[in-house]
Length: 409
Image (cartoon, rainbow, N blue to C red; front, side, top):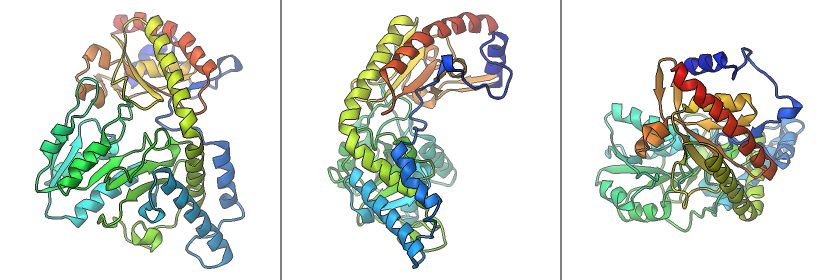
């Protein structure tokens, strides 16, 4: 990233200070909600009692402890209801990454003789890097590809399953493009072959309806801070009768499956966020999709060499990935951030090395476009005025950047 920052400083895009607050004339527009969301005010209020007077340990039997236990179990019920699961099938974790690791390693530990895993080449790093490490430990991993629109072929998934397949792990929607995979169909295929299916649903829970009873999904990961809850809380859904081994030793929390004192405040916030998502999702999704489409149309119309990456017909309502020809993603993110538009990129920009996102590479996107691929992700709190402001700010900034980068390179 240093090389990008140096070039941008030369052009006056980045100021040579560690932090520069935005002024009133440049209120920041936050469009990085796939990275994290603003905690809902109701969530913050739900958490505060457990950071103040109700500070008891939920494993304690005295009244303060039991008040905390009551909050944890109420949250478990709310999170379970969001995906139509039973409360006893929900185990709280520190977030989506732990839930992914818990699911994959827990199933493998219960099936030591099976040494094959099926996953995709576009997974989140929590799954991607874990499976890469497992390859170094003697596991065989089949990496399923996607087409140019980021779509996964169920026939290829079915062909990859073998007698020694211990687990298949597939995301519900891609965190960079928002493209949705047919997990219901994949669950039916894997169940017919007796293979547990883990679904990373971090980017879909609370954004689109998800019913774990509609298909035989074995395990499913969730994260609170992706749906206006707090950071530090997640959950793993484990379907009844799915065998899973605990990864840590300690106390008897989470029915001996996840030892360690629960983060009561964060769990309570998670539960409140789940309740809010259930109440607002039906109305939020179409409104957010309209804002996303408006943003997309404006940027494509007013910016040279702009292309949408991914299947525009089958994606989460809040996400668009746009590739800008001949530009570098990290330079775009830095430039827009310094000018009050917060987005993110899957690309890595380092001094002497520029690599596009592994997701866009797997999709076979032209490198000229993939190197400039960035993600705009909206939320319940995104407004029409913010979208209009983004369309107003971004095109001239990218034009200035386009004039700078070829000459600097």
